[in-house]
Amino acid sequence: MNRLFLAAIFFLSACPLVFAEDAEMSYRERMLKDVSYLPAEYAAPILQSVEDSAKKLPKEERIPVLRQLGMAWAMIGDTPSAKRVFEMLAELEPENVAVKIMLFDLARKLSDEPEMNRQMELIEKAAGADSAEVPYCRASKIIWDYAQGKVGKEELAEAKTLLETVKETRPDWPKAPLGLAEVALMEGNYDATIQHLQRVDELGALTMQQLDLLVKLLRREGQYAEIKELLDRKEGMPMTEDTEKIRKEAEEEKVPARRISAEDTQQAVQAGSIAIREKGYSEAEILFHSAAEITPNGWLGIALEALNAQEAEREVLEKIAEMEALSPK
Image (tube, rainbow, N blue to C red):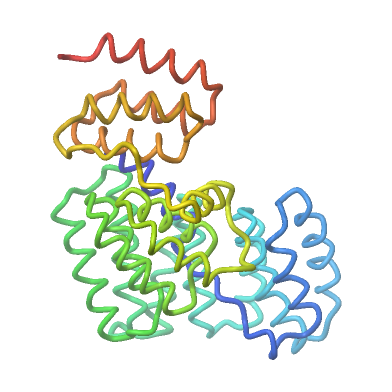
């Protein structure tokens, strides 16, 4: 499986963004939470305006607003802006380990290895070597290294062990099951990925992107009853277009028409091509990944790239046909 692709998809939310309880929020904080669910092009000008005005607030009012603002920037996918805001918070709260963890996660998302290492040192100094935060950071760094091709499966297994330790130390911290889900996804263990994401959901920290991934994995396994139950509980939560499409399938109780054998790469590719023609892009994505997991041929990688870039349907199909003709039989 394409490890870089998996890391990119899953780290959309490797740091759970948990807003404060509504009852504890000021009107500014509630507004920021609501704005974070808007499309980025609408949300960004509002968030920038709030950031500019927040600088004029007294410190005790500024801190909670900046916390929600940083999360809102992250929620709309503007990682540099989120980093900028959390750096302001770090100056106001130099002993706040949670802020340092957020800066570490954002550095990882930006592939800023020196900053990741710097934040790891600060976290160990502030939280102590025996804290849950230190093994979490070590595991997260190993996962990033694995995605970069710097380490292998042995080190990935070490990351899994570290995260299991974090899970035992802090059972209610969403970062442990999130990290374990990421490892499981990289290993191709979809059942375990589902279980870990469900635990994140139990802890109330499942983001829109993580929900999308969980729904796609449940769909891959044909678990439509579970999808219906999950999305019924998420009524009112913003969802991706793919999640909404799968919700409609679940409501209609459709059974996946194409279930493939784990050994049949050609069948997976053919089914993926059919799914594209039928505009079932989320299903095509899963089918191509199944095939790439079995036989990571270069042409499959190109097909995946084309699909992920949302190229025109005809161009995707042409690339698949061309590359399949060149692939070893």
